[in-house]
Image (tube, rainbow, N blue to C red; front, side, top):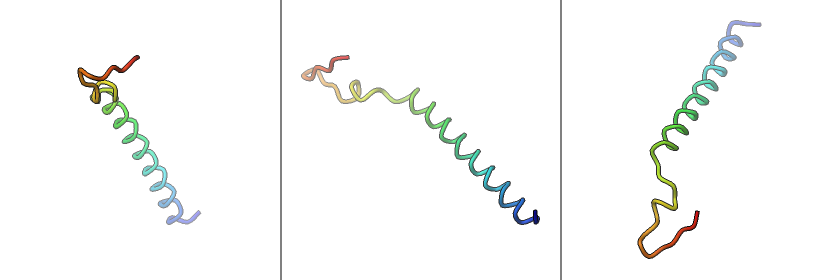
Amino acid sequence: MSESKVGATRSFWLGTLAAALIAIVAGIVLSATNPSAATKFSTPNVRVSN
């Protein structure tokens, strides 16, 4: 394989790995910090059953 193909393949896999890591971290952070929709949009006049 030529050097440019090796570099392109390496860039592709590094980009894929970076995107996966960002998605995992974002999922953990968002699930840990955000309240559920039932909690966020509930008022004393609205009943939301679990």
